[in-house]
Length: 261
Image (cartoon, rainbow, N blue to C red):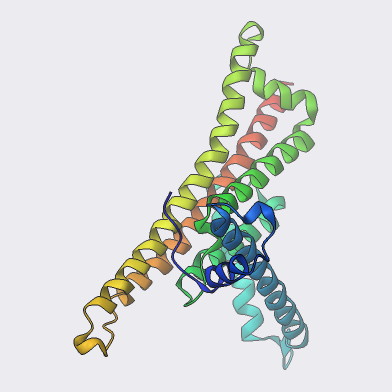
């Protein structure tokens, strides 16, 4: 398995390992990857929390200027309204109650992806354990909302299909389908972000090898950084869009059942 590009967290891991300060579950060949994923995610969550608190205090004091909404408030409100409109357009306006989660997962993944272009940091989403956790949480929440919306009986009917004697066969297919969604969401996000960060690291190493006289770095990686920013945004959007589609799929089933009754 390929190793993630070096970061400050990797250096910290090596230091702790040399001084025997790591817990046992991190003292194995994949320990550095898990350490990067855990610490990177915690660092992101802490940064996210601090940023949200700063924004909340700032916006609460600058909601209005001279009786009108401030430009800052209008900017953030436009982002929220825009994302809500995009996800509702994708699903026919069925996911409005779930926009807080969909929007949160979008920004969490976006900032996770962008951490990889910050010198000395690694994107938490370039580790499979992080993307699997996000995918598993998303699919579990979709199942919970499906049960809450359709009732347990309607939820089971969705898995068994219309033809009773084919129910066991459809049940197996639906369970496989849900497990496939977890793997698909996780592997797509992991593969793209891991590839993005590895390309950046490779290009940076290449620029070091061909520096004139070994002194002047050539920033070959700058065009790649632009592509990395676009990739980070696209992958966050795809994950969030698929989440909204999965939610809408269960709601459509519920509406279909109600029409028959």
